[in-house]
Image 1 (cartoon, rainbow, N blue to C red):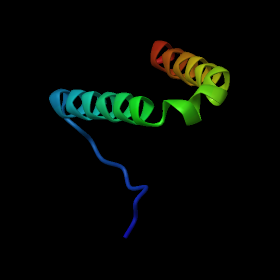
Image 2 (cartoon, rainbow, N blue to C red):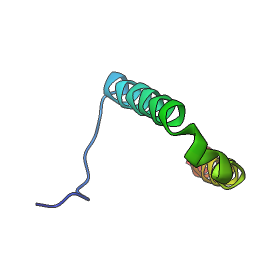
Image 3 (cartoon, helix red, strand yellow):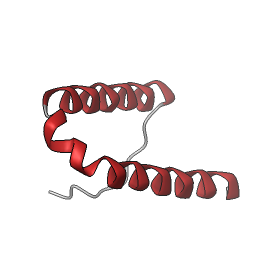
Image 4 (cartoon, rainbow, N blue to C red):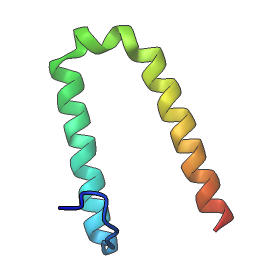
Length: 61
C-alpha cells in the first residue's frame, strides 16, 4: 500500500476536501482550545509560511 501515490481530484472534490479539513480544524480547536492556546503563535507562523510558499509555487506555474 503506497499512501504517497499521486492522484487527481476534480475541482469539487478538492473543494469538498478543503471544507472537510476546515470543519475538522474548527472542531479540534473548539474541543481542545486550552491545549492549543500555548501553541497559537507557532501555529499562525506555520500557517503563514506554508500558505505563502504554496502561493509562490502557484504564482510561478
